[in-house]
Amino acid sequence: MRKKKIKTLARNKRAKHDYHIEEYFEAGLVLEGNEVKSIKDQKVSINESFCQIRNGEAFIVNMHVTPYEYGQGGFSKQDPTRTRKLLLNKKELKKINGKITEKGYSFIPFELKEVKGLIKLDVAIGKGKKLYDKREDLKLKDDKRRIERSLRNMY
Image (cartoon, rainbow, N blue to C red; front, side):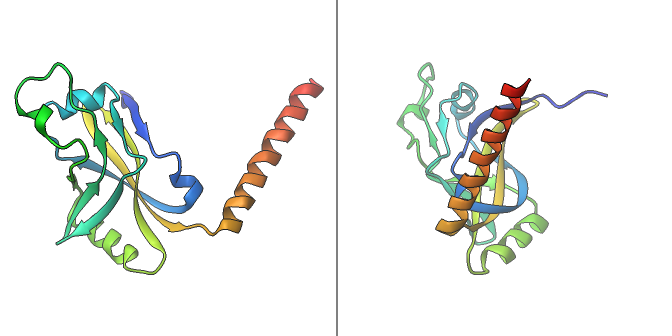
């Protein structure tokens, strides 16, 4: 049995800080030209991007893919932050759409990765955290770090 070869290309670090993540989905991306080469070179950012559903299809908006510098042709003229289609099945789209129509839920890009040579995007459904939730998470993280540090110093 072979293990999947997974390489993380980009991660939205603010997602876990800003949202209570409830469920993850793995989606493919519709890419053009040399975008794949540029993404595999990790010249991509999903920090300012967001996902939305339009006419029963999922899209990622504002994902920045730096144009591939060695490429030929029209890719260098394309908009690096253009809207790209996400490939999800109808059952997943229906589930996501049902959740994000509820108040407080968001459809968030979480992690861009390469799985067996294919570019996949982990998207998540999350509910926005309040300021006091964020503070509580930071306190717990700090306490955990302090305990680990004291245990290391004991031994």
